[in-house]
Amino acid sequence: MPLLMELRNEVARYAKKMYTSRLVRATQGNLSARDVASGLICITPSGTDYETLSAEDIVVVDETGQVVEGRWQPSIETPLHTLILQQRRDIHCVMHTHSPYATISGVLYEPIAMVLAESALCLGGEVPIAPYQRSGSREFAELVAKTLGHHMAVIWGNHGAMVVGPDLPRTFSIAHALEDSAQIYFLARLLGTPHLLPPEEVEQLHRFWLAEYRQKPIEQHA
Ligand SMILES: [Zn+2]
Image (cartoon, rainbow, N blue to C red; front, side):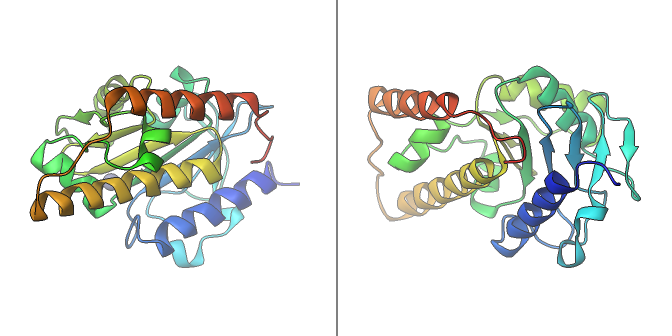
């Protein structure tokens, strides 16, 4: 019996949702989820073909990135996913996207200001931006993990975005909240001067959101 088929199926399903909702195009991006009971990580394969992706294509690795089961090579960003999952015990999913408006933040090197309540809830403030470095190496993994810190999202300079979350549905929502707030913020700037949410309101909204998700037990295969 293959390992963790239920979670692998969910990773494949959400990876396809990343693709169909245009957070990524072609074979871009990657997605991982931790099985809380075993600590094993299910991650999309290198060069993912989203249209044909199935549970069997998802690779199971341990926390050091060693392949435990899978017919393909895991994503080239596996060192980054495993490092973040090692460092952040409060989250179990890592999603890397190339969503265009969030990427604009990493091209201008200007943070996305908090202009929408929905984004303030899950992002809790300006999203940090990691300086450009070629991805796929241990050094890059350390840079991004350090820039992410305790945040729920990080922009990769001249590249894309990464979000983390407690489970697949909420990680997917955070990726969209990030993209929506970037789109609204940068378009609003073209038309006028955006009004920002007061920092204390952002902080309070984020605190509610964290309390809500930390109260709910993480489902095994959420
Ligand atoms: Zn990328």
